[in-house]
Length: 261
Ligand SMILES: [Mg+2]
Image (cartoon, rainbow, N blue to C red; front, side):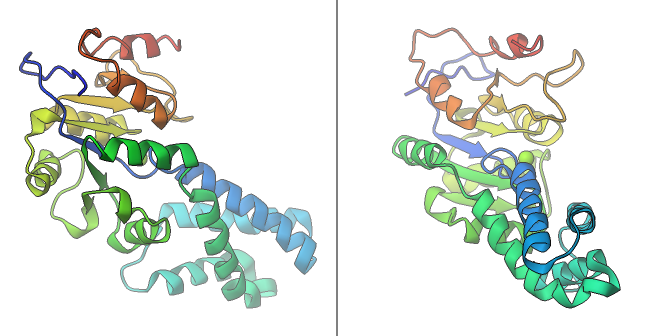
C-alpha cells in the first residue's frame, strides 16, 4: 500500500481515492471543442453550409451549452435541441434535431475514457475503493456517467445536483466516506479545480490532494491552496501511489509545479 502521510502526521494506508469527473477523468472541455469542430466540418461538407457560417453555428452552440448545460424545465434533449435551433438561426434551424443527435454521438466519442485511464482505474480498484465526486446538474452529469459506462469503475458516485452540498463543502466528501465506510484521513482526492477539488479535499481533512493543471490554470500562484501533488496526466497518479514506504513525504511536487517544471 502507498505511504501517503496523513495530516495528523501519522502514516496511514490509503483506503479510497476520489476522482473529479470533468477535465480530470474525462477531457470534457477538449472533447466538446473537438466534437464541435468536427461537426462544423460536416455541416460544410454534407449540408453545404459555408465554412464561416458552420464555424459560427457550432461556436455559438458550444458557448451557450457551456453557459447553461441543463435547464430543469426541459429534458436534456429538448433543451439542447433548442440551443442548436437558436445557433442555426431561421435559415438552418430545420437541421437542429438531426445535428443534435450527431453532436451527442460525437461528444461521447470524444469524451470516452482513454485506454490507459481505464487500465489505471481497473488496477487501482484492486487495491482501493474508488469514488467519483462531481459538481453539476444531475441529468447532465448522470448522462456522462451512463453514456461513458463509468459505473463499472466506482464504488460510489456522487453528483452534487442530487445532494444538498457540492465541492468544496466537506459534507460531500464526508458522504462519500460514509458510503464507503472509510475515514477522511485515509482518502485522497484528485481533480483539476483548486477552488473545489483541492480546497475541498484539504478542508475535509483528507490524507492528500492531487491536482491536474488545466490550460486556463497551468500553475499554482503563491496564494493558491497547496495540493500535495501536481501531475500532468491522470495516469501519473499510479507513480505517486506506487512510490513505496521509503518515498519522501507529500508536499514535494506542488512546489516544483509552481515554477512550471
Ligand atoms: Mg473538473
